[in-house]
Length: 80
Image 1 (cartoon, rainbow, N blue to C red):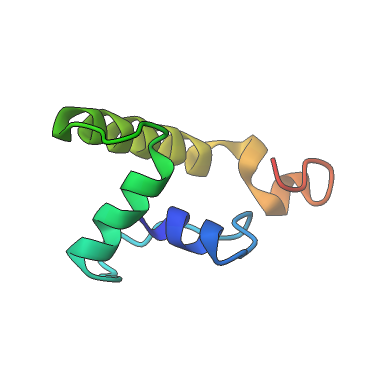
Image 2 (image 1 turned 90 degrees about the vertical axis):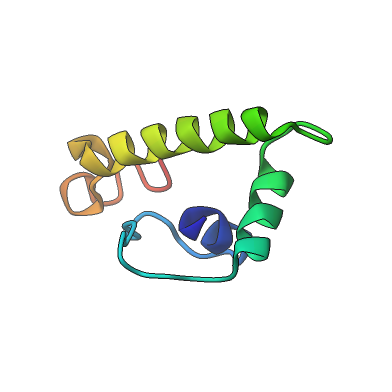
């Protein structure tokens, strides 16, 4: 949710990192973001669950990757 919210607001996500203990927005706002970004019209709960699970895995791997660290790659892979 934190990534999707900032993406919609036009923030540069290169330096952003998920904060597990930071509560942002309401459950309704979170659900709205997932519905907007999941890519399926009228998704089921399991489709939303699969979308959020896959997104979380991808973002966690991205944050852990040295190739996505802006301090390491500097401007070589900006926006990657």
